[in-house]
Amino acid sequence: MSWSGALSQLLEVVLALALAPLLTGWVNQCRAWLHNRSAPPLLQPYYLLHKLFNKESVLAEHASPLFRATPYIVFGCMVLACSIIPTLSTDLPLTLAADAIALVGLFALARVFISLAAMDIGTAFGTLGARREMLIGFLAEPALLMVLFCASLISTSTSLATIVETLAHRELAIYPSLALAGVAFTIVSLAENARVPVDNPATHLELTMIHEALILEYSGRHLALLEWAASLKLFAYSCAGLALFFPWGIAEAQAPLEMLLALPALLLKLALGGTTLAVLETLSAKMRIFRVPEFLATAFLLAVIGLLVRILLGS
Image (cartoon, rainbow, N blue to C red):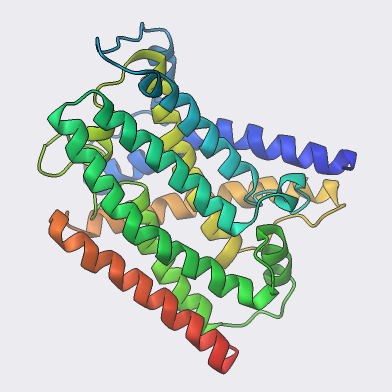
């Protein structure tokens, strides 16, 4: 492992930990502006994390070790997911050990543990949220895999770094397969990050909440880690979408000086992506939970069509 690879890998992790709450704060600000409301401070997620880390964690009387360990496992999975997605450079040593399939596996592992922890206490809300979360994961993960496979056919590799290098250095052209995969990825991203129209992160109504029901029994540092992990997941999906469909500006391997230009490019793309997410949420209405399978089935169908277009037409 070269020193430039180690440096870029370290910067990837540090950048994800630092910018993930900022991205969440930016999306919340844009949503408030579009709703014609007073926007919270941009650094509000950092204030929340600071407050929670300084509070005592209160655990249920019959909480098992699984309940205590889940925040750390989920947080670790999200950090690993962010570390294998090229954001500044494609020179990432971890991409040799983890590809796109491993990325989906990390998201699935975190989902399994947080669902088990939600059911561990035995509350009605926790069980409700766990069942809904597993339903969404069961439908979203195949669609995400099809999107990644569609992109991997272009580079003939499931390594995210190889996919980004291949797409970034091809002639500028519109690929119908990637366009269909991009729409499917947007739908999956909304569902996986508990955003409107699948879920609403700003509500605690029992008929609508999914993510909030999973973490309702956590407090203190445990809740802080889960909130940070949720921001990291949004950051990971945002960077994955930018890397697959807008890969320009990411530095090549063995070119550490290009990372100086990659950072402002990443910040600009994340700002535009956060604004787009806020606009999509504002224009959408919260759908009933029984309509979510149809919503995610559409994403899977679009991803499969994109895959077939790539295989049959080569475009």
